[in-house]
Structure formats: structure tokens, C-alpha cells
Amino acid sequence: MLLRSMIFICLIITGMLYAESVDSMLDEYSKKNSLSQKTIDENKGHLVLFTREKLEKMHAKTLKDVFKTTPAIYYHENRIGLPDPLTGGLFAPYNSSFIRLYVDGVEITQGWMGSGLMLYGDVNIDFVDHIEFYYMIPSFENSVEPAYLTVFLYSKDVKRDNGGKVNLIQGSRGYNAQTLSYGSQEKDFSYMVNLSHTNAKREKVDNGTDTPLSRDFKRTQLFSYIKNENQIFHFQILSKKTDGLAGMSYDATPLESEINYLNVHMDYGVDLSEHWHTQFAYDWLKVDLLQVDDFSLAWADAMGSNSFDGTYKNSTYTGELTYTNTLGKNHITAGIKGRAKKLDSFTNKGVDALTSPFTSEEIASIFFQDQYALSENKLLTLGVSYNYISRNGGIVDDSLLQLRLGYLYTTDTWSYKTYLFRTQVALEPFVRYTNPLTSKDVTAQTTVGMTHELSYTQKKYRMRILFNVMQDEDSLLNITMNGIGKDTEYFTTIFNYDYDFDIDNKLNIQLYYAYYKDIFDFDTLKDASGYFSIQNTYGDFDFYNGVVWHSNSIDWVNYFDLTSSVSWNIAKNFTMILKGDNILNKAKETNLFRLDPATGNLLSPLGVSPIDQRITIELEYLF
Image 1 (cartoon, rainbow, N blue to C red):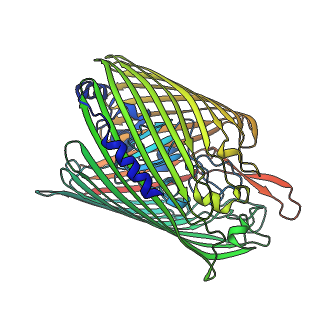
Image 2: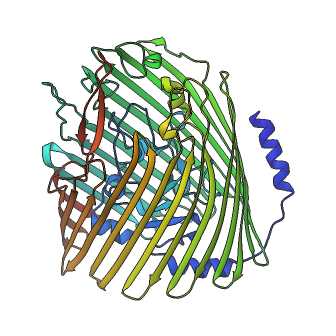
């Protein structure tokens, strides 16, 4: 079925009309909005940008340090201690596959288990130059699968970062991390290798027993690339050995909970010509699970009874072919993409533990996008994407249609853009496989929405306000026993204000309000939160102070996560940093729900903060 779909897509592509150009207009537009070294395509969506300068002033060491400051969708961890911003604290294996993560424009995915955010949500970002968060439905040239938030990590270019760097960090409770990076520009190519190791001794969580829950982990991470003018190859390895917090215990009192991950990613991209680009990616994931409880485990149909000691492996293959051209006032992008997700093996105590013939999911996608210049400062954009998902094991297939219509207007000081969109998302394979609530075929989620963004820029300050209204039909966050979710409604408004006193002193304010109807188990949920930061430089010293504030209608408790750092630039190539995270020990908590397995009654949830209170000292040396 996948082959037939790809042949059909190729026939459609060959009949498309191509075009010539608004390159100068798009160039001008991106120049007015880019705060980083790379040109940013505003049509990707609504952007929250973390420039190289800002990341360095924040002394952000992991993606979590950045993600916790973002509006509306911010950092959470689920009951097994994995980054899961959309977790409801219940027993679903993973909720955040609506969020897609890319490194240098190539998606990192855990395939059968879902979004690459699962492991990369708190990844070491020493190799990163800048980070872009795009809200709502993305530009269709990016994703094989639909998304509501796309996170782009762009690696450092050795033209700027030639040579090596060593970082050593020591912190509270024995927390420590080491990073070694080296890159070089040769005659015909450039390369970079970044190796890091983290031993995260984290705060324990009281669960009412003599053995509190642990989420300590050790992570070793390799990032590398080699590239020339029209080719690039990435190779990444991430090994994470972690205590599994509550694991699969219904009442959050596991006797044992350990999960080890080994993830390998490789990709190769090449510009075939001025207009044609192709890339291929391979992701492999191995998960070793040890779960023991005195009652049956959650997802018992997949995991066995009250103990599981097994290994799960999956492979993901992704390929795409993209064509861009220009004609008159049209800038055309079109392409085909394919992805195959395979459950390679699933064993328990050395014995095959597969409980379903469902072991494969294949996705074929076709997209077309036109950016039409109405004038020098007005742009109309239309995008269409079709996804066909085929599955084995008697699971029904899905046909998904994504539509996106936008209008952009810019002047030297004003910028406005608006989008109408429709997107559909299917349930991820691992959730479908393990969750007894989804043993039946699950209806794909359909979302329709509208966004508006207005910004005003002057030499010293920038202001922006963003509105989003959307509705889910058959929400995957509210799946019932018959496999159909409620309809969920969303309203979000975000306000940003940035002020530069001078080149050394800068202020950032971010406020947002969100209203949700029928999300998770709440009839209504209101969220009023914000972020405030100030950066200062005095001589050889840099100072950063940032506060993340959260409050919602669950209890209207005010949570404050204060981060402060001071760095001393002792020499041109040597810096010492003192940093405090969650200094007040009042960061936002995630409710971890519990169920009495003997009676089926809900117990009081555990309030677990994903942000540890920690003091660290860091030494950075360039060579």
C-alpha cells in the first residue's frame, strides 16, 4: 500500500506547475524578523526564538532550561520521568507526539513510541547555536507528520566555532556534567563532534512509603556532523539510564522501576540541483524495562502481570524529496515524504511478549505550498498536505488532510500575520498498542483554528501579541473506553515585550492567558502565567535573572521558578559560572495521579516539580 501511494504521489508531483519568484520579498521579510545568524522563514508559524546570545546569557545547558520558559506549552515530565509537556498526569504512556523536534531541519523521532521529544526534551544543547519554537500548524515542507508545536535546534557552524571547548559542571546532590566539543573547517568540508555526559542526581519524591520515588539518570550523548556546500551527514547517539519515578505502578509505589534507553540517529541530505533536495533518516531505539509492583502493572495487557523485565526495539526509516521553484510572484514548494515505523521486537524475561500482530505503521505524505507576493510587503500563503497511514495486524488505516491559509504584512516597524488551519492527527502506535482504552480503532483527531499575530518594532524595543482559537474533534487527550475522545476548545493569548537599554543590558517580559474546555478530566481549565528576565554585563561579569510564573484554575496557587547566574570571563578563553535553578524551590508542579489498585478509587495526587532546586559551578575553556 505504501509503494502504491508513493507511486501515486510521484505522478501528481510530476504534473505540478512550478514557479519563479518572490525571493527578494521573502529575503526582506526574514531580515526584518531574524534575530539569529540563520535566515528564519516567518511562514513556518508563530515564532518564539532563542538566539545564540540569549542562550549564552541564560547559560542554558539543556533543552529543559529553555523549554520551561516558553508560553502555553511548557516543560513537564510524566510518571516515568520523561519530558512530556502535554501529560495529564494520568496513565497514558505518552501525550506529546503533537510536538515535533528537529536538528538542522531533520526530525528526530522515536518512531513507534512517538515524538523525539521523549528523549531529547532535556537533551544537552552545548552543540546548539540557536533554537526556534513554532506554534500551531507548521509550514508543510517540515514535517512528515502533523504537529501543533515544532522545535528546531540548529547546530553551531565551525566557521564561527572553529576549535575546541571543554565544560565541567558540579552541582547540588552530586550532580555533574562534562562536555567536550571540537570542530574544524577543512578545504572541502567541515565537521563537528560534541560529546557530553551527565550524572543527574535529582530530588526524590515522597510517595508516603519508606522508599521515595527516584528519577536519577545518567546520560551519554554524541552529536556529530560532516558537511560541504550541498551535502550534510549527521550521526547521533543518546544513551540514558534512568530510575523510572512512579513507573507503571497505579498507586506510585513501585518495588522497582528502572528504564534504560539507547537511541541512534543518522541522516543524509543532499541538494541534487538548484531546485531539488532529498534526505534520508534512520532512527533506532532500544528500551530495557524493569518494573515490579505488588499489584498488576498499568498497561498489563502489554506488560504482563505485576512484573516486567524485558526489552523493546523499534526502527524508523524516513525519506523525502522536495522541489522549490519560483515563477512571477509565486514561491512554490512541493514534495513527497515517506516514513516506516517498525516494532522490531518486544520480549519479557527472554520470551517473546508481543500481544498483537500490530507491528508496523507506514506513512506516505504529499504536500504543496505557494507563497504569493501581493506586493513588496504583503504575502499570501496556501498549503495543503495529505497523509495516508497504513498499519498491519488488522488495525484500520487513516487518511489525514492538513490545510493552511495565511496572510502576512510587514513594514519597517509593523508586522501582522494570520492563519486559518485544519489539521488531523492519528494516535501514536505505542499508545495504541499498550493502552487498554485504545484497544479498539481510534478516530483521528481533527483540529480547526485561527491565529492572529501583531508586532511592533523600534530600535530599542519590540512588542508582540498573539491570539489563537481552535477546537479539537475527537480529542486524543480525552479518549474514552470506546476509543472516541471529547471535543476540546482552546483560547490562548500571548504578549511579549523586549527592551534593550543598551548592548549590555536587556529586559524581556512574556505574559499569557489560556482557556481550555473539556481537556483531560477538566470541564474548564484556565492558565495565567508569564516569564520575566533581565540580562546585564559589567566589565568581565555577566548577570542573568529569570523568573517563570505559573498559576491555573486547578488551585490558583502561584508558582515561581527563579533562575540566576553570574559568569566571570577570567580570560578570553576561560569562564567560570555560578548558577542557581529554582532558587525559591517554588517551581510549577505536575500532578501525578494515583489509583488504589485494590479498590479502584482515586488517591490524592502527588505534586511533582520537573525543575530541581540546584546550585552549580561551571568551568568553560576554549582551545
